[in-house]
Length: 533
Image (cartoon, rainbow, N blue to C red):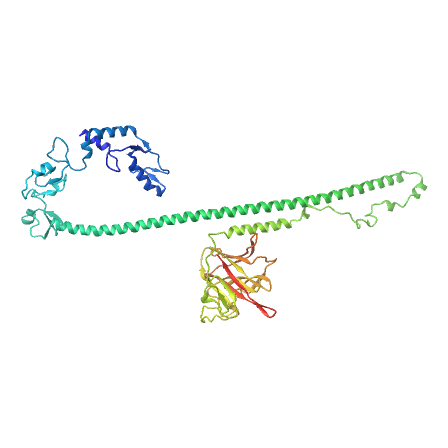
């Protein structure tokens, strides 16, 4: 008895055998080193490790501490009881001197038999043999104490022959246990097959989720890298702006200081001259001889030049020093505009440019659409597309196939430096023919337009001319649908904000293009617009 209790304490809960090279986790539970290593290897992919018994979690793979005392006890136990260590089944009932594994159990005798005692066992029919079992009583009828041989299909119960002949199951339909067991096994096999299919589906979902997690992690790393690069560039540009502004302020301060120093020197000289004149006049005023006073030049010549009607060198007035408000703040204003552009660059930063393609079904017949659905070019050759309600019939226009009804998005275009074109967004309900169909000429579209080498922002025929020179051929259109903002930027360095339309959008929005041409001499200049990816 004591030996069995000791053996239970020396069993590894993973392999169910006596410990081999036992190791201990920090929670105090012991396992075979090979067994716990295999368990931890399977947990390695999840990123969290846990004890198989108490489920204590570890953020990192736990270190394994060898349990020397337990190792010595397990080794001594196996050495002293080698036969017991080999026993894995039920022992023979009649082998009382030592534990010998049983090979069969007799339902009639309610005993388990080893090979030796099985050979001497009775071969009569009532002695039914079965696989070794410790619960032989359960295989007999609790009423008649006979072996359970049949199955009552009406009551779903295992019965003996007496139950069927004279007992409560008399007259019921019955089958042999083997037949019912076979049918039950077939059902179980079907259930097993379904379970295996579900497990495979679950494993596939696990792989899919793991792949999704991997992609999400990769995407997060990429976004973090992009954000880091963005703010590194912003800091560099801010440092450059700060140095430029401070340098300009310092230059103006030095220039003004030199100018004021020269003016102070001139004023000091003038002050000395005035002091000399004042002393001479005081001497004349103190003379007693009237003849001497009258023989001196007229006192008007001794007065201050301003009082005498002007000074030839100063034009009748002294130069006045500049005040603090005279500081040239143009460079500071330019800096603030650049800062606004930098802030705009931060605002339009998102997950990436929207994937937009041109919808050939809306393209005018004088527009050539590239195979990748990214470029629209004005052409003189008719494309012979069928006339439909959604196709533009005038002004060589086309819409995108993708529509935007929520969220924040941006997309970039590259344009021809010559010709006539418009780029913007419109509602799908925009007219498809006539003057009202031109983007910008209605209240259902917003655009930037290039015409006669000039650029304008247009909505509902209201035109806002863009000041300054447009140096780039690349533009960015940014949409914040919920905020009702549609912004246009010139992709120069630094990025330049052109204009922002504000509206309460009532329909989904499509990207819209109008590509026309202009006559130059005897030939036409073709225009084109390309979506940048």
